[in-house]
Length: 625
Picture 1 (cartoon, one colour):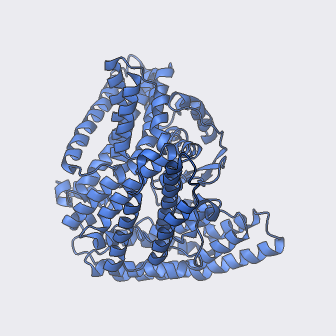
Picture 2 (cartoon, rainbow, N blue to C red; picture 1 turned 45 degrees about the horizontal axis):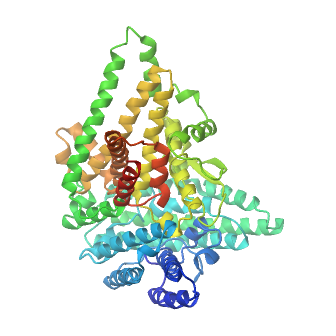
Picture 3 (cartoon, rainbow, N blue to C red; picture 1 turned 90 degrees about the vertical axis):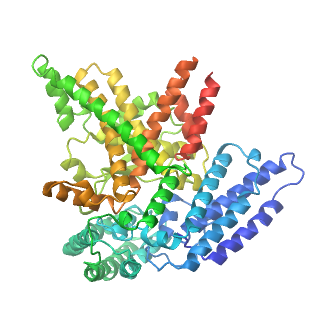
């Protein structure tokens, strides 16, 4: 996690108090407010520097002018993510640093803060408390080793390397040089992943054969394409598109990038692919997940991940499981009720029956919207019933994943945060054409609502308009941010079902709403069963056919323990929160307004903790009575 030298961070931290205090005018009547605000934001920027370190990729994507905006100064040549063996000393150093930050934050009285500053204070309080707990755990060294995605069946950091090359911004010639340095470092970085595999085996946390096979399949696919791999043509096009290079410079850079891809990226991929064979067969028992096999260590890490993703503290995961399981059963019953209603009219209303199942199969598109552009235009209008209009009108376009990457992931789309220090920036939603073409029943309209309007994209642009800090927006509470994005899908379906005259569409919307909730919550339940309760293949199967499916389930969930906390528990929490507020105001005679309440929820960025969301809900109820 830490990438900046520890002594450097401590020195920077020690200087903040002096620099901030000396920069304040002592005659100001609100001196303490100014001091608190300036010192808080200096602390937040320093914590951001600690977390992101010298990561040129992150700074390039999330900031236009990182040095001017956040005090980032590059200290070394940019390079791709590599692995180094964690030590107890490095873990203890991290624990110490977070304690120092906590002590400094305690110097600030939150009563002297307001608006975005208060949101930053709350977020820092949560981050520091959460990571202090992690690095002070007796299992901290184990956590650091096993809670990583250097290697996965979907390519790990090798696959994300291609994403980096795609989205790295070429704003000036320094950026072109920096990305070239990153490409040149790929071979050395990929070689260190074999050290990671060795460390996992040495610590009795070896990688499973299914993970290694999946990684090798991806690497073999890349290697088989050679210079036909899309990054070669892509970098040429990327260089040709800039205006600040001469034709001679472009030709020179294209040659250098080609050589770097040949000599570093491809050779590194080859070394890693061949080297993974040495770690095959390291796990004697393959029918239980990583976390399930780790016993107390796995449970403790899962508990920390749950609390870190939600902001909830000291939770009883058995109670969480029971509550979620019971709620999911209600959603399944609602789905069955809709299907029964439709099936009952197969003879009396064949058109409704056929139309409903046409929506189910994706043969009939929602409201006749066929292209992403048409869908986005519709969403911008209908979203006024969910959220207030943005102050700005951002330009939004669609990009598409390369098929090599797209076909190994079940991600249908994603939104990448635009730079925090750039207002009015262009926004991009990336779609997985391979997934869409092979899953025609997945109505892409709700996906664009999730990733774009009024989901992630809207929430992030709104946060920038509200002046949220870099730290607040880049370290969101994931259960809130994903819960919010899923909730927008649910609310969109509710609005369509009310506005449409098409009974089949209204019924499909009701079915789909419950399907989305039950699906995400179901994955969270399976995730807990596999990774927290430690269920094995024997626990999940009663026949040879079931056994084969159970193996696939464990292999799917074991590499991403707790990832469905954000989606499954997040969407359940967000849906219940809205229902509770509506019910409370209905009982108390209050006037609930959807856009108004959602504006309040998003007033502290796109990812406050769930604890804070509950507080805002209580405040809203009190204000309306």
